[in-house]
Structures are given as structure tokens and as C-alpha cells.
Length: 323
Image 1: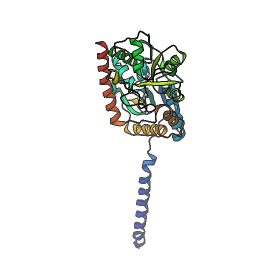
Image 2 (image 1 turned 180 degrees about the vertical axis):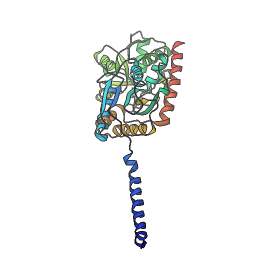
Image 3 (image 1 turned 90 degrees about the vertical axis):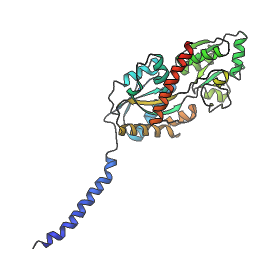
Image 4 (image 1 turned 60 degrees about the vertical axis):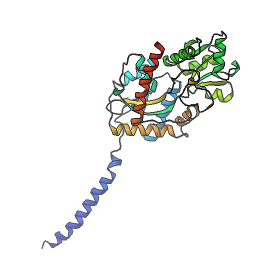
């Protein structure tokens, strides 16, 4: 009398197992990480500059792609250290990130006496590298940094624009290595250097990509690269090493989060940022491709190692300047 129940038990068991398998197969999609609320994006530099433009354009694209809400907030000053100090007070749950430059956690931090430590942050990814050149107006008649040195050796006062203490140190070392002294003028941001050169208030200066349009038009010239590698736009420009300085101004725009971020959150945020900046059809990708030679995305252990190396190099640079 119970045979009917026994015969229907197996199909029921199979159905139940199938349901478990279906639910199990969909579990990763259901568990995909997303922020618990709006993401605060702390931007370390002033509105309208290269870092701010990249940060906001990246945030907009992530919102479009992921549906996350991202709220930009400017926290400027001390080469990005004010933003870094603000970030470490935020929760490590993916609802707070910051856009800084690698120099923030390297030279700027070392020079300030290490107010923050690298282990207080979760590095997410770089998005673009500096296209740092030493730039002058074409009408000056200089075609190489060698012409600048010759002019200085002949007694001309050279006003050299910089946008950070590190670049001011490099300006000093360039002069010292070649027996001259530049009148170094530190201004606010790369746009300040660009405006000063174009207005004739500066004779030349360091620029990290904003010079691209002017160089293409023939109004500006890259006299030298300040990088360890050639500039994308003018690969034949000499390097600072050619003029006796073995340091460089390599650096990156990058996103960071507070220490303690979960692997899931780190992976999701990093992936979203990389997707936004790597697509040249987007505003973020287009800006980076036009001004900075294309996206450069260093992340994970490679980024952590790079920051440690830049920290060490910064200590050596400061020692060299103090000699």
C-alpha cells in the first residue's frame, strides 16, 4: 500500500537536487559585491586640473556602468596628504576612496616626515602615468634642454616653473649638475606652470601632459623628458640623465581606499575603475588617451611594490638635495 509513495520519492528528490543546483549556479551573481551606500570620492587636487578631470570622468563612467552613486569631494593641500589623512578616517567598506598621485604616498609623505604609512591604505589601481616633460614656448628658440643650460651659462636668468617640492628639487639638481642656478618658481598645479609659460612669466617648466595640445600645435616644445622612459609625444627628447641627474619624475594618477578593505570590494572597485579608463570611447578613457598617452593600470602586488620603490627613491632624492 506504500509502494506509490516510494515510487514518487525519487522524482521529488531529483527535483529538489535540481533546485539546489540552480540556486548554487546563480549564487556568484547574487553575491556580486556592491557598495552599501554612496561612495565618497575624495579628490586630492583642485577643480579643473588633470587629476580632478580624470577622477570625475571616471566616477561618471562607473555610475553609468554599475549604477553606483559616487559623490566627489575636494580635499586639497600638501600634495595630496590632506586627502590621504581624510581617507584613513573613513570606513574600509568600499564607500570611501580617493584619487591621489603616487607622489603623495612617496616623496610628499617622506618630505613631510611620514604623517601616513603605506599600510594605512589599500592601493586599488593607477589609471594614467605622468607625461612629465620640461617645456618651453617654441618662440624661445630652444629645441633641447641643452639650449637652456647654454643660455644660463651665458648669464641669462632662467625662471623654471615647478608644481611640487619634488620637481623643485629636480630643478635644483639639474642646475647643480651643469654649473648653473635656476630661478625656481613653484606654482599651484600643472595648469599654473602652463599658464605661466604661455604668459611669459616663466621661461620653462615641468608639465605632466597638459602641454600635449600646445606641442602638437607647435606652440610649445618638450625640451626633455623628466621620466625614466621617453615621452609618448616626443620620444626623441633627451632625458634628465643626459644632463647629469639620475632621478626621475615618474608618477601616476591612482585610486586608493582605507586599509582593511575586503578582497571582494577591492576586486570590484579596481575592476570598475580599470573598465572605465581603458575604454577610449568614454570621457575618462578619451581624456587619458589624449593627454597622458593612454591608460596605465598597475594594481595588486605590482602597485604595492612600485609604491615601496618610489618611497625608497624619494629618500635618496632628499639625501642628494641635502648634500
